[in-house]
Image 1 (cartoon, rainbow, N blue to C red):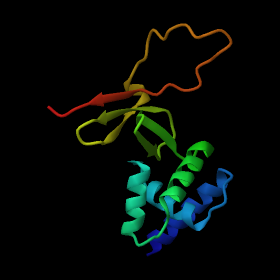
Image 2 (image 1 turned 60 degrees about the vertical axis):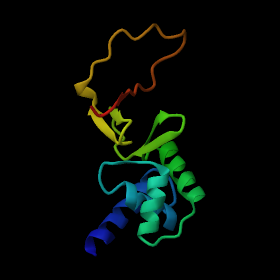
Image 3 (image 1 turned 180 degrees about the vertical axis):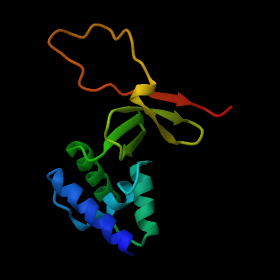
Image 4 (image 1 turned 90 degrees about the horizontal axis):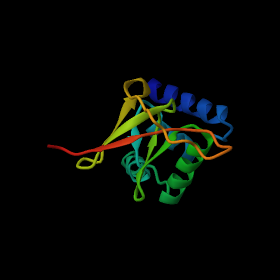
Length: 138
């Protein structure tokens, strides 16, 4: 039980640190997503909340995850137009996405070199570069 209280306090402090109010829903969603490095879709977060007996609407889950991404608490990883995951690791890195299992796995930035980036349009700079390598089982 102490672990749960400790996680709750840690999540609430992180939410406040990023400038959001730690509402009950935000805290519960944060406890699902921020306890250790992981990648979850909004649907997976919603399902985990239901399994814990929490009644939080899908709309609230989506709105909270979008706010977390906007404020930098999590990274939003769009694999394709119908699949978005929320990544609790916010330092720059890349991903493998297994199209057979739906699993997203981290690739450390140091493990990947990106060369020959095309010339950028005038008056622009790279803000972020994230690569998703889609893989399948043999």
